[in-house]
Structures are given as structure tokens and as C-alpha cells.
Amino acid sequence: MKSFWKRLKNDKVGLIGCIGVLLVVIFGLLAPAIAPYRPEQMFTEHTMQSPNGKFIFGTDEFGRDIFTRIVYGAKVSLQVGLIAVGIGAIGGLVFGLIAGYFQGIVDQVIMRVMDVLFAFPDILLALTIVAVLGPSLTNTMIAIGIVFMPVFTRIVRGSVISVKENEYITNAVAIGVSPFTIIFRHITPNIMAPFIVQVTLGLSGAILTEAALSFLGLGVQPPNPSWGVMLNASRTYMEFAPWTILFPAGAIVFTIFCFNLFGDSLRDILDPQLK
Amino acid sequence: MLIPVLFGVSLFIFFVMRVVPGDVAQTILGTDATPASLKQLRENFGLDLPLYQQYLNWMGGVLTGDFGESMRTGKAVLPDILNRFKLTFELTLIAAVISWIISIPLGIIAATKRNSKTDFSLRVVSLLGVSVPTFALATVLILILSLFFSYSPPVGYVGFFENPIKNLEIIILPAIVLGTSMAGAVMRMTRSSILEILRQDFIRTIRAKGAKEKVVIFQHALKNAMIPILTIIGLQIGTLLGGTVIIEQIFSLPGLGQLVLTAITQRDFVVVQGAVLFIAFIFVMINLLVDVLYSYLDPRISYK
Image 1 (tube, rainbow over the protein chains, first blue to last red):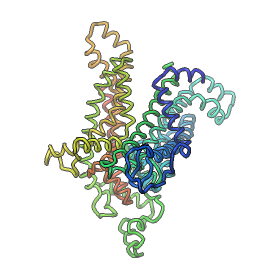
Image 2: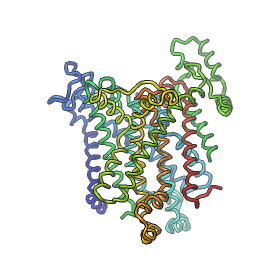
Image 3: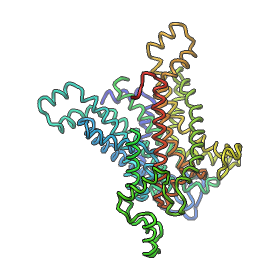
Image 4: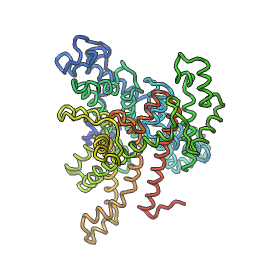
């Protein structure tokens, strides 16, 4: 852990990414304390105001404070990111461990199902699942989780197959340790590095997909504050109120950029070949 | 593996569409529909048949080129898909070419000037490219063009052979947005693959024999680095196809992506399953093409 922090401190780009991610996390967690107003609070006498002392990012067509909605939007994005990636990662971990350890017919079945899910472009698969489940925050998270599951399954399976070849695993099998113990006690801790990197990169992908689905009207539903919803709603009057577009777009780009910077740096730090 | 995957895709899309909560006929006709009209719709679309029979009927149709009729408009689905695919194909192709033009030379420059200021700037730019969503880029671009140049993108679509100039005017902006979004990932892969190759012994030998740097990079390093680059290009084409759903919506282009989105919002399941199956088929075929190109680039790879 000490060496991890040391390496992160030396990697300036990764450190910037890490600070950016922490900032978004703090905004998301402390949204009610940071935001000056409630996200649905309307100031009808202050509609479409450009940034000023009272509304630092301006207001939208209903007179809602854009800064407040962006701060609460961070909460929505983080929630979707964590839960969706959680669904994909846990599903991928379980299926990947089973497929990689037992191989044979179980592996064939699991991987062919994953191949089928891989045959769809991400956003299209998410759209289809949301179409079936109905647009809502929960369904968006489920859809994104399912979309991400094949990537995690493939990464975990590949790592398990390589770790399984080690002598200590052969020895554990020889002395009669149960497959359950081997998988969770001896294999899982050794496949965590690529898994954690994928989780970080998956978070940015999940936030991006949520914003895209919400932008298309099939993700988080108004009046809930989501950056994608805000961006879509502002399109009709963006020429008269460009701040309604620029701030949500900036929030999305900033968040994804920081997650990607951090994920990239994490990959370099956790990759034993680069040490 | 192609046929089992496509069979799995068809099963998945068909059964996913059938687990929609509520009655499909009721969703289509609304709450005012009479029992007779609901029964009629169910019979017309075979919704009253057992699921396996509905699937077999649908697949039988798909294999003979009949994807069924839209539940909303009654129009045949396949001709509509093919008609709209022309636009989506053109958009994807131009976007892909734009992204290659941007990403491959910049990736090579970044790799050859490793750890320099140029490399660092290009890496940040490429990461920014990966981080900017197409819908945000498109919206901000439209805003900038409108505010500073009083320009609005043309609406509608004209085929390339009808009016090439008008066609390009319609396609170019969405293609630039899509292409830029793809360029970041391809550029990162180009840089890392070339760096990997440049470290190898045969490159050192070529350099030791006095070959010019241009020859080393373009004749030896780039060709050997093409396999991972092609892999990411294949995957990115899928992303591009998915990305057209958003881009066509923003630029009001009547392509396949817009057809899917409209069908989803209208819950026209025959169109959704037909169009999604078609897109998945194209995606799988592109990846097959990429696999075939591997053996062309590296003759050691063979498929038996």
C-alpha cells in the first residue's frame, strides 16, 4: 500500500486524476451541504439568468440553480457508476471465476453467453434493456451493469486461467483443499490488480453511458438532476442561454477525464511488468 | 463461432423483447382499445402463439429476408432498415476515415517522440478525446457554430449520388464529431503498439544496418503494430454504430440509429428486434473482417 501511494505521488498526471475523482466524490457525497439550494427549487422570477453572484452557474428555464443541479448530478452519476459497475463487476467476478476455474462445458456456456452480449454495441444493448425495463434510475443501473458484465467476465477468466497454472494452486488441489477455498482464498486475491483497474475505467464508462441514456430521454427522468438530462433539456434554448449547456457538458467531461487519468495511472502502478 | 453467436443474438433480442412488462398489444393501441381490436392485433402479429412458435416464425422470416412489419406503421421492416442503413453506413465510414487520419499519424508522432513535451500534450489530448462524449461534443459544436458563425447544420438527408455536395454538407459535421470521439482510443493504441514494437530486437537490427528512421517506422514498426490497432478499430466501429443512435438524433438524420430510438420510444418491438439484430450482425461481420485481416498482416496467424 505504501509503495502504491509512493508511486501515485510520483505520477503527477495520475495524482491530478485522483484529486479530480476525490473532488467529484466529495461533491456527490456532500451535495446537500455544498449546494446552496434544493435541486428542484424554482426561482420563477430568475429564469434563464446568466452566471451571477446569486447563481454562480446561472439558472435554467424553470429558474433552477444550475450549480445546485450539477452538484446533485454528481451524486446521481456516482450512484449510477458505483451500482452499475458493482453489478457488472460482481457478476463478472462470479462468472469469470467459475468459467476460468472449472473450464470445460461450464466455461463454454458462460463465455458463449458473454460473446452474445459482446455482439451488441454498448449503448445499443443498454438502450434495448432500458426499453424493456422502462426508463428509470434503477433500470439504467441494471442495464449498464449487464452491459459491463462481459468485459469483467473475460478479464477475470483470463487472469484465473493464468493464476491457476501456478504451483501453489496445484499443491492446494493435491492436498485436497476445496475448490471454493482455492477460488476465494488463493485465486481471487491474485487477480485483483487487473480487476481493480477495470473497475476504475468501468466507472467512467458507466457515468458516460448513464449521461447518454439520460440525454436520449431513456435514463434518469426529469426533474431528477442528471447531467445528461440537463444537457438534453437545454438544447432547445442553448443559443440564448449557452451556460445551460456549457456547465453540464463541462461536468461530464471533467469527471470522465479525471476517472480516465486515474484509471490509466492505476494500470501503470498495478501492472507488475511496468514496475 | 459466427453462426452460434448470431443465433444467440437472435434468441437474446427476441426473448428480451418478450419479457416487457404488460401487454404489448395494449401498449401499441393504448388504453382506449377495444377487446376486438386488441385480439386482432395479437392475431396479426402472432402474439397469441406460444413463444417458441413466435420465435421460429420470426427466424424463418429473417432467414428468407422478411423481418416482419412495423407494429406502428405496418411498413416492412427490412427495406426500411436497408434504406436507412445507407446513411448510417456512410456516416460510420466517413467518421472512421476521419478518425484514422487524425489518430494514426498523431499516435506515430507521440511514440517516436516518447516522453517529450509533444508526447505528453498528445497523450492528454487523446485522453480528452476519449473523455468527451459525442453528445456533449455535438451539442457544444452546434452551439459554437450557431453563436460565432450563425450556422445551423442542414436537416434531412440527400443521397451521395443525388447531390454529393449537399450530402457531404449534411454528413461532415456529425462524422467529424463521431470520428473525433473514436480518434482518442485509436491514437492511444497506435502509440503504445508502436512503442512496443520499437523495443524489439529486429528494429534494433534494422537500425544497426543503417535504415532511415522513416523506413523503420513505416515499413517495419507500423505494419507490425497494426494488429492491436486493428482490434481497437474493429471494436470502435461497433461503438461508432452505437454512437450513430445519439448523433443521428442530435443532427435529425433519418438513419438506422434514429429508427431504433424511435421504435424503442414507441415500443415497436418488431422494428427494434429487426434493427438491433441487423446492427449486431454488421458488428460481428466487421470483427470477422478484422480477424481475417490479422492473417494478412501476420502470415503466422492462420485459421483452420
